[in-house]
Image (tube, rainbow, N blue to C red; front, side, top):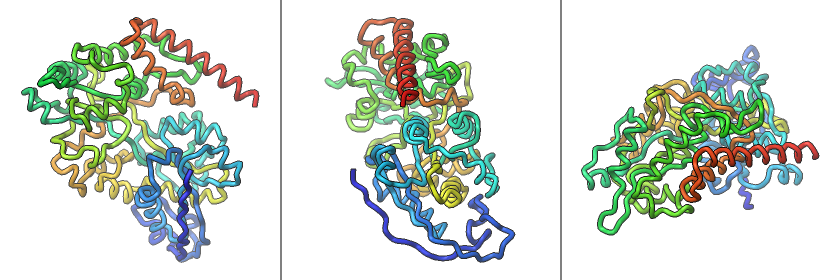
Length: 442
C-alpha cells in the first residue's frame, strides 16, 4: 500500500459565525455567544477510504480535502486509502474520518468498532437534518441500529439509463423516455437485441445484483430483526427476479457466457465495445473518458406499474466521525461542510457528483458547468422519489454476490427461480450463523 501524505499545515484565524462557517454552510461555529474573532488551534484530520483505486489522492484532495482546508484554515487534511483498518490501528494509525458506501460501512466502520454517534455535534452545531434527502438519512439511522447517527451522506451514484443514440438510430428504434416502465424497457431491449453484420447487439446491460439490492419494493436481502435471508420467505423476490431474468433469456443473449454477465463486462459492452444499446447505472457516474465520443443521452430509471413514481433505493457514500478521533468537533464540522448548500451546489454544477440534499433545485443544476453534460437530460440521473430504505444491516453487502449466483444458476444451471432462491437463502443463513459465532468467539 502506498501512502501519500499531504504535508502542508495551514494556519490562520476564522470568524466564529458569519466569517468562519459562512451563512450557506449550515455549520454554525461553536460558542457563537463568544467574541467574534477566536483563534483556533491547528488540527490535522486523517481521512480513510477503503479502496485506493477508486479515489487517487490527487482527486480526493481536489474534491474534498482542499475545499475543507479552504473553509477551515486551521485544519489540515491527510488522506489514507486502502488497507485493513484493524491493521492500520494496530500499527498506531489514528483515523478521524472514514468515508464509505452503505455496503462498505459495516466492514470498515462498524466491525472495527470505530462508529461514533454524532448526535452531540448535531445538537451543538445546530445542524439541520431536514436538509438531507430523507431515505438517505433513514439508511444512516438504520445503520446505527435506530439509535443515533454515525455520519452524513455526501454523494450518491446515479439511477438512470445511459443509452447509445447511434444504436437506436441504426435500427430505427425510438429513444427511451422519462417515465418508462420496466415492460416498455423490455420491449425496447427486444428491438435492439439482434445480430447485424456479424456483430451481436444486446439491448440492455446492468448490475443485476445492485438492481436486486436496491429494488423499488424495498424488499430486504437479509431481515435485520431475524438475521435471515428474505429470498425464500418474501414472495416478491420471485417477481423481482423474473422481471430481470426476462432480459437475459432473450435469444440474442445466448452468446454471452456465464462469466460475462457481471457488471464490468456489461459496462464494457456499452462504453467500450458499443454493442449494447442501454446501460442501467447504479454504481457510479461515468466519466468523459469512459463515454468518449459516443452519441449518448440519459433517460429516467424504469418504474413498475405498481410504483409509477418511485425509483430505486439510494446507495449513498457517507462520511463518518470515528470513535478514536481526538478532534470530533472539527471532524464533524468538516463533514457537515461537505453537505452544505454551498459545497453541494458547486460540486453539482461541476458534475463531480450527485447531491444528497432534499433541495431539488440543487439537483437541477447538475453538470451546468461541465461540457460533458451540455444538452443532456441530466434530470434523469436522480429519481424524483427514491424508494424507502430496505432492511439495512451488515449482512446485505457481504451477501451481494449471492444474487449473482441466483441469476446464474437459473440462466446457466437449469434451476428454477424458487429452487435457486431457496438454496441461496440457505447459504446466506448458514454464513450469518458462522460469522456471528466467530465474532462471538473473539
